Image (tube, rainbow, N blue to C red; front, side, top):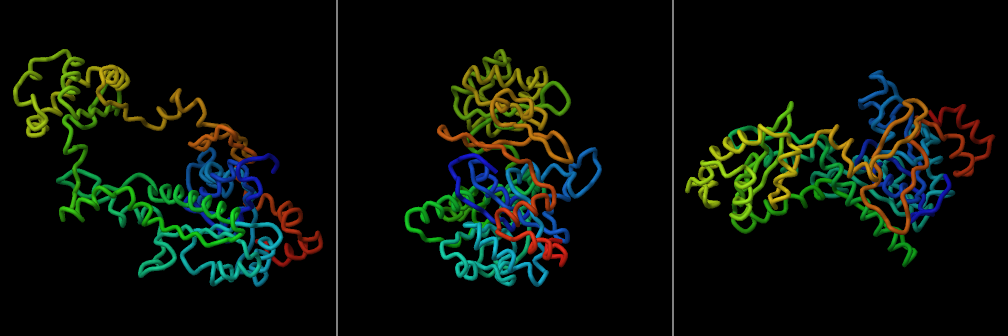
Length: 405
């Protein structure tokens, strides 16, 4: 893996699966870090088992999820349950890695003999990052789970939905992606600390706690006012109209938000100032809030005559907040995103596929796409012989003994 980047010289041995752990290292690998992704045939990265699959045919190397989120990585298999598995991992740390990342349930790495204190004996300046559900300590730290569980535990579901309805589940493991951002920041901070002092450290990322940062207003409301916020649908206490309105086409919508009387005046102008807009009950924010259900119905009758794109363009031109409710097709074809976000790569099994480049750009150093997501065990020979320092004889012997299963 050639090429210079901001994180050139950072060598990450990654014990992790799905998103919450691996995407942290992917961000660094996009800017020059080298990463070895560890799996086994008995315990492959679960993202290999997630659809969609090439031609809708499931297969360990036919899924699109892992190549999208774990590109730019060497993929190896290592059976950590084999008596020699842990020693092989330690040798990779000794001879190559200067960072270890993982997102297992707390205690798993320590029980395997690869906890932070053990790794420090091998490499005193090692940085270890653990991205776990609820951190390494505390009464609930040992609870296993996934990002979707934490979405509910963190309070997002309680605030999502209609006032007279049940809580709604957010799409996907939302907390996973929040934790990844904090994890990447924590790892970069640890790398800078080591650059200045020579000292390594253990970075403890609690995905649960990172998610709560995004609900600070609701927590503050309770702390100050003892008020527990509930579900409010698409409504906002400080705006009316404020919602998603139907437009021409199948399942097409446009969001409109009006916070001030000036914005209301501009919205009315775009609508052609129909008679109902001159009703005194809609003249103020308080009045519009009191008659919001009727207001939403009237605005929906107007938006239904136009495409979502037309509504957005006309309202934005007059200083009214509006946006198309985009679906996956919209985003994939968006001319703004197509400038730099989507990239094409070639995978040995699934062929050409598209992935998302880093959403942050460095003016001095471009991101790099060097390798697609690895096949299971694709780089075993290269990694063990050329990076970890095993001889050909050692490699063949360990292979025969099933250490790389």
